[in-house]
Length: 560
Image 1 (tube, helix red, strand yellow):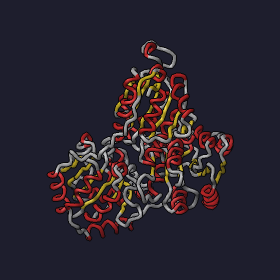
Image 2: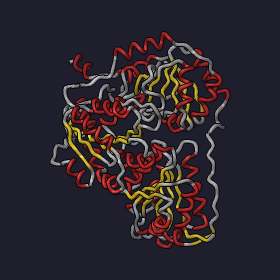
Image 3: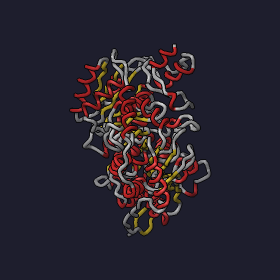
Image 4: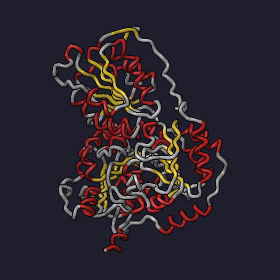
């Protein structure tokens, strides 16, 4: 059948099973939006307040559902406003397809109105990108974009389409989507055998769980593997929920704000099994001193990650789920009672703690965990609140903690929260932000209000840029350069101005009452929580130091 380019775009989205698109219209993409109007009974388009919000919403939708997220924008500033969201998805391996439209072919390269080479701009932060100048290539390009986004290590793909292509016509034939197989061709039996031998020799193994386990949906295989190895478990920020945080052998997060138990145990172990992690600097600290007495096994789908940040002794390349299936088949039950007992004693002796004299982030997050029975989806922005959310909420399942780990994008959370709630309407979805982050994309409250998306927005307001202030306190001689936000902004009034119910709380009793109300509401709600501006995230490792030198406020007090 003969279709114009805009119709082909929509038909290809339907082919790929897309039911929701986040975006913002403009001149060059008008043809596509005109067709969206005709297809509104089949594709749900969410109009965000800003293109960055659209990219973050598509990202949150993808992380929560496991599907490919889709966002759209027009040329020029519309396209460049997607860039931060695309980069966020790239750093965290999120499958995303961003569709932009550009000026017509005859106007390319002439500094035309709202013309920009978005393919060139986005090249370093996408798995692949395309510019479509011929309508005959359009359908296959969009299909390839979805396949690339899902294959192997997932990531964002950008498709830029000239406006004349969206208007031109050609013959279109429907096709079944390509079934993306799990990456198993690189899994070598010899690598499996070497890893199994190393595991059998170990006396003090530790398993480090990264975001790759979440992406691969390998939580069940991981649980079996942990049981067979009989090892304590820690995770990275992106690995939250891949292993049930309520298990006795779970030690907590590893790294700069990891638990003392995790950091000390990894530093003492004789075998570290790292699964689906890229060994970020915030996780490993000083790479030369990281797990210095241990043999290391690294399992990852991306060969480029092996020996990139940490030299390892054994590696297995392939989809995490497939690798764990093979390992589990080859591995008999191991026993490490003495080691497990030692780690358990350490965990009991070094618990996480916080000041309960005033309202604090940890206390708020512990109540959120209790009130939701750990069954909510938590999104966060970036900063102290993000670390508290990782430390004090007990994640039982994968894809329930959505946060910008690699890029550290302030302003990520609210858009992601909206996208996650649209994708998982049966779940409570809660965004936890600091006041600095909340300001960055507060305009997306208008999106939640417009569509009555019943998200819960928690603002931990300490009137400062908390994490930066923490560093200034510890490492910069209390010189608080441009981190104080003690101004006249009233978040409750601003939120109400966007049509969202809001309240301010100063005690845990007030918070509990407000949060219980928010859980029962069928509309969005903002809860502003006033906390102390000098609350800190503990424990901590000094940047670039060995993770075994983890310290708390009590340790600092003892030094003084």
